[in-house]
Length: 186
Image (cartoon, rainbow, N blue to C red; front, top):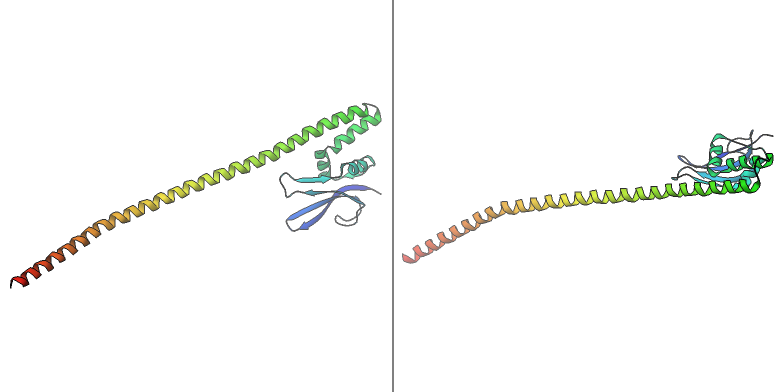
């Protein structure tokens, strides 16, 4: 029986998540499997890979063949390197302690790179948010300036009209006063 390590799809349309499963090569993609060893979520940034490393390594050493995608994920997690080092130990090329030391150094380096990428993404989001707020503040200031100019223009236009109105009121008041004086003289 040929055993494969592959992905089984689940989740809704356009929001797929995958289970990493050990299955018979003849079984359907989302069908019967032997064991579930992890999950893969490509919707996050960076993609979330949660695999039981011990079980995956055990299946790899027993001859299970990963698909291309799963092989890339296992390589990303360091399991393909661990398998390579373990084969070297079996052949006598290096000792178990040397292999463990190399693997631990690789894992520490990889975790720092992953953390650096996550930090960079967070910093980029913060910078983008700050830039959007600054742009919004500029637009608000421009609107406020335009409103103030419009208001001043309206007041300037209203001032001569008010003066003309006041002048007209004064003229009518004077005319009424002169009429009243004329009537009193008669």
